[in-house]
Every structure is written in C-alpha cells, then in structure tokens.
Amino acid sequence: MRFMILVKASRDSEAGVMPSEDLLAAMGKYNEELAKSGVLLAAEGLHPSSKGARVRFSGKQRTVIDGPFIETKELIAGFWLWQCKSKEEAIEWVKRCPNPHNEDSEIEIRQIFEAEEFGEVFTPELREQEERVRAQAEQLAKAAKP
Image 1 (cartoon, rainbow, N blue to C red):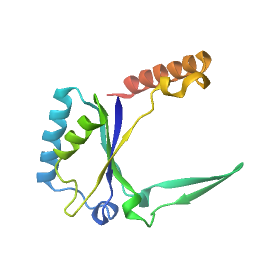
Image 2 (image 1 turned 45 degrees about the horizontal axis):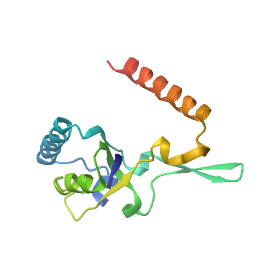
Image 3 (image 1 turned 180 degrees about the vertical axis):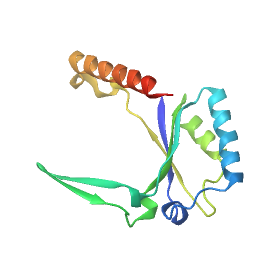
Image 4 (image 1 turned 90 degrees about the vertical axis):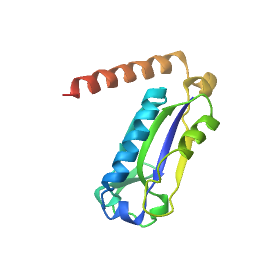
C-alpha cells in the first residue's frame, strides 16, 4: 500500500520562514530511518502558496488564480510518499515524526489508489498506457539527475 503523507502549512511556512538547523537535522535523521526501513519513496518540502497558482475548472473554462491562498490550515507545506503494509503502519511512522513546525501542527495520511482498485473500467489498454507513461517519467527523471 502506498500513502501520501501531507504536512499541513503553518503561518511561518506560508511566510517563507525556513526551518531551524535543529529541525532540519531531526527531519534528516527521521528520513534516514524511513529510507533504511524501505518505507520512503519520496520526500519534499514545498514553497509557500504565494509562489503557487491554482487552476479552477468550470466546464471547458479554465481560470488561473495566483497565490497566496487564505486558508493556511488547508495548505500543504511538504509531503512524503511511503510504501507501508497498512494504514496503521503509516500512522505509527507519522507518530515518530518530529513536529514539522514551531507550533501545533497536523500531518494527514492519504492512501494512494492502486490500478486494481479501479476494476473493469481500467481496461487493459488504459493499464498499458499508464505503464508507458510511468516508464517514460522514470526515464526522464533519471536523465534529469546530475
């Protein structure tokens, strides 16, 4: 089972305040534990929403909305992608995480859909297409690494 672990934003993260050296060290140690356990697939921090944009869809119309966005509690400051045996395992890992902010904070755990969960509507042709896209993305990612 794969999970996306979402670190909610704070006033500081939205203001562009960088984490302390102590927090970076603690998170680095935590990420090493995740990697050694085989759980970690990816981990990234995000710039504040002031550097972002949203695209609103209404029928065929697309509207671009530039950040910053108001509701800090609904924004994401960073994420991990994990491979775990269960949601309970993901919860146990999150409980071991250093507090990502200098205030009360929240981390959300969301399971990622797997192809077989879509049933018959995910036809063999669509599965082949997804496999091709994943392979292409992996090749491009490898080529982009220094």
